[in-house]
Amino acid sequence: MIVSLPQPPCTGSPRISSTTLCSLDPTLRSCFIAGSSHGWLVIADERSNLLLVNPITRAQIVLPPAVTIKNVQGCYTAEGVLDSYTLLDLDLDLETQGCNLQACTCDLSLEEGRFFFYWRVAMSADPSSGNCIVMILHMPEKHISFTRVGDTQWTWINVHPDCFDYCDVFYNDSDGLFYAMRRSGEVHTIDVNGPYPVVKVILNPMTRSRDSSRYIVQAPWGAILQVWRNDQPIRRGEYRSDCQA
Image (cartoon, rainbow, N blue to C red; front, side, top):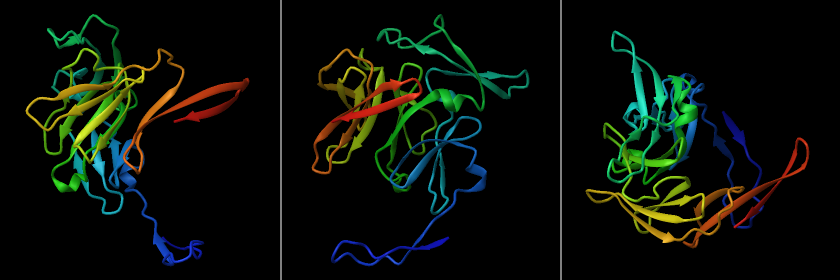
């Protein structure tokens, strides 16, 4: 579809006479969009597996299956066909480093998993570059796992006792690190460039309040900002949002 645009109001700006709007592949329209970066969409398909999709070129890159996430367990039929998922809590004891099978679990169909697995997604580069790392915050306790494009499984990051309860994550091109923020306002850098992930605390917890929706972003001038959004009920069924940076 070609759409004519009006003359830009800024003096000296080149005139943009048209643009192209690309529709998503019909086979992907029922998928769940978990995130986007570098012009690519991160999509969870009907079996709850993630794939990267370029909506312009329609190129697709398949990421490791959901069953390779540490706390996602596949349930199979007698014939060995994947039939459903069980979502487990993770035990962050650095000695056991495993799943807590005694904790409350959630049984999900193949299609339901995508709505319960993924909280945030960040990418280090254009996936077509061949050097892209994809990092996810996954539920229920918002742990972090990552994979490199071309890998066959997700790697759970559990090298620090506080590697959970994250609310947002982004990649910083200037230093090659991921920055992740916890609900407490605590900020971690995550280095996955070496043989083992390295997590460092660069900002201590700021508050115990859990009423805000919180995000971490990098400003155009390089500063790293926290954005807190507070929803305040006015009357039943009506809300006001206040954003603070």
